[in-house]
Image (tube, rainbow, N blue to C red; front, side, top):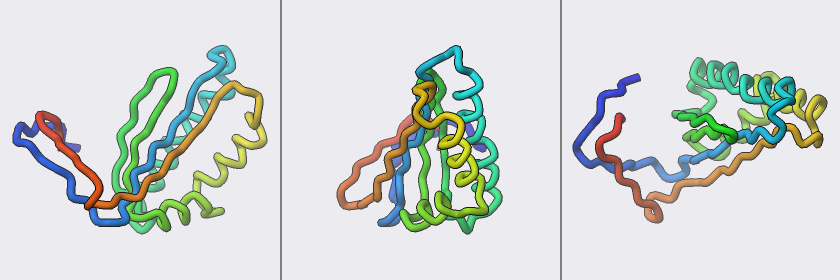
Length: 132
């Protein structure tokens, strides 16, 4: 990963149909570490799986950590994202099953995702003085 700061202004030009996914976790009960830590930690094997196989359509991600952990992801298409999330052989599906069994509605940890399809004609980006 190149972390060299690029000083020239740049814009993004993603192909139409690219998906921006915001996915995250909110820790509601700090003392229930056994509930929220596995949820946060589950992202690691999923990211490894996604980066190993480009056929999934996963393009990039960046995460921020606080009481709410949020990950910004880019996917080739909504179809790719949905195929990965429903794949019974993948890491996501087993983690989702664990969450629904172990955590469910106990309020210890919240999860969310929002997926948006990019329309290049209806977006605006500017990047300056940040790494590619």
